[in-house]
Image 1: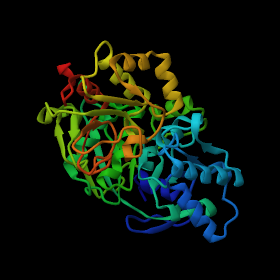
Image 2: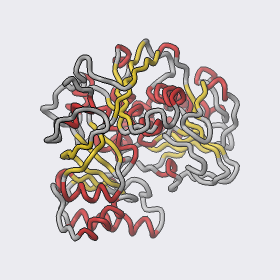
Image 3: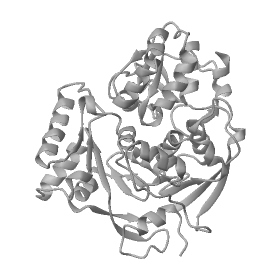
Image 4: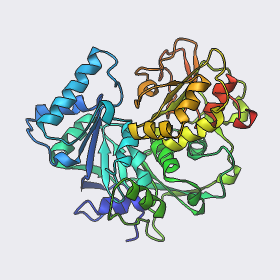
Amino acid sequence: MRQNLAEKILQAHTADQVSGPGQIVQCRVDGVLANDITAPLAIASLQRMGADRVFDPQRIFLVCDHFTPNKDQDSAEQVKTVREFARRMQISHYYEGGTSGVEHALLPELGLVGPGEIVIGADSHTCTYGALGAFATGLGSTDIAAAMVLGETWFKVPATLRVDLQGTLGKWVGGKDVVLALIGRIGVDGALYKAMEFGGPGLAQLGVEARMTIANMAIEAGGKAGLFPADDAVLEYLQAAGRQGDSRLYPDPDAGYEQRMDVDLSDLQPQVACPHLPDNVRPVQEVANTPLDQVVIGSCTNGRISDLREAAGILRGRKVAPGLRLIILPATPRIYAQALEEGLLLDFLQAGGVIGPPTCGPCLGGHMGILAGGERCLATTNRNFKGRMGSLDSEVYLSGPAVAAASAVAGEIVHPDQV
């Protein structure tokens, strides 16, 4: 039977014959992830089960990134719970403070995820790792607790939506624009419980970090997973992260898909998602001159070094508009160090930006950039639901780093060419 990427990876982890969408299969997992918000819930479930061990201390990943550095006593208690659990279970992949970063940027750069693996996480954006050829998806904390103990979980085999990328990316257009345009086209439920598999001749236009941005936001179209083949670019990235022995992974020729669609990269302009859903997408020109109070550049979607380089290239030698707050959050300590060595942080500081530590922070309305009533923010994050970043009376727009940086200078949403 010819299989697409989702079916092929699930097949390698189950004793059942994967026959097609809708089938329930029990699968071994290669990694289980939780953070400082979701891990305490999983730990409580695990304790109620009476479990006193995890299936493999080397394959549990605990990353304290949402409310850290601890914003208040409650968040400190949450991290304490996770820290003590990690010590008790002898979990080596526990990260907080100076070792921590935004989980979906941290795990790939540490080489903890690779092609053909199944990784589950108590966070909806776990699908990021599909950029590396992994079947990665978010589950609830109770399911995560069971997987921590058993080393396996069940899936309903998803149907697959195949997206063939064509053409060439234009100036200022990147992975964020590709995925926003796609979500705007199919809607927030257009890939409900489907695997979104990306390929086609235009794939070569996208670096691995851009692919992570796209896979990250598969969930914003309702997707179960966002999957890319593991090609030479992926293997080079993984080797740089210290992994050895990974192999290329592609879908079988003539694999079955529920639906296929093309995305012509050549036609894309920089995109902006308007309040209050990620599918309320417009080309930047259609929302130009929308005034802003805050711009955030960071998150698991666009806080990587390529994003910071793009933003710094626009901000260098320029100043943030008076009255606007620009917040820069490098996604991991390593990215922070790279940005420091390359002088990017100085560019941000001289422009009038505020540089924060690696944290999810404002993305989830946690801290370090909360919006007051009536305020408007443009962010490189992945969600713009009502009240997502603070007040229910605030507004969040989404864009890539180029539009975000240019808009910070202008004080309103603009095309990067305008600055």
